[in-house]
Image (cartoon, rainbow, N blue to C red; front, side, top):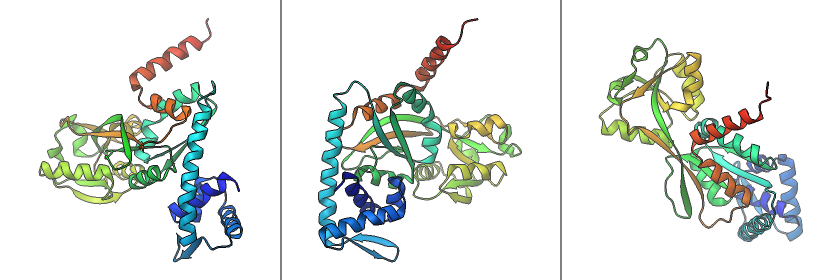
Length: 311
């Protein structure tokens, strides 16, 4: 029996889905089914029940899942320790994050990391914040990077970044003429927001309640790209991280208005399962994530100048 088979079985159980397990392991759904059939034939017992589109472990499946998870954890720790004996950092890293963080906050540290450690593969898995927490706790990803990180049992949180929030509006919106406004200035405005339950939405709801601000929601979305598209056509304004609209601001399709409320920022944190033994690749990746962006840009600029051919 291969260790990969046990991981696939755990992924099916923990995601309650053959298709998600296939996606996480970069194989087809039929290959997942074949692996599960092999396990059931080996032990002569049905391990999974499929009902109404959901997958649940049987009593035998529960036993195999608990034991497999322990085996996988010990295997990961063994690999990490063996890699620590090598001078060459290799391996793979799985990171769970949300679009508004992964698309706009990770590009610089990833470029720097890949330049120094080309033998490491980093897999970014985009999901809702609540699912990122679950994936970290289950051990399906090494790290999670989320906005408004919350302390939870068995989780450790490290600081990563702090986003500044701004008002985004269409160029023909009346607020586009303003350079800076208090958040109370958006009272009564048509508003494009995130879905309830998304951490940024929850934080903004608290801010609006504290400052007695009421907005007219015209759409509630789970994707920041869709939020920006509706802002561009003047369906409403939005309050989003400054970095997330930098491209549209440069292109002139969105106008950024500063908020005078300096406390309106969005903290971003790195989360991982407490006690997890990291490989050298993951340890160095965390170090690169925590390098100040200005320092990183300065170092990259110096490196480019040094590499440039002399006239």
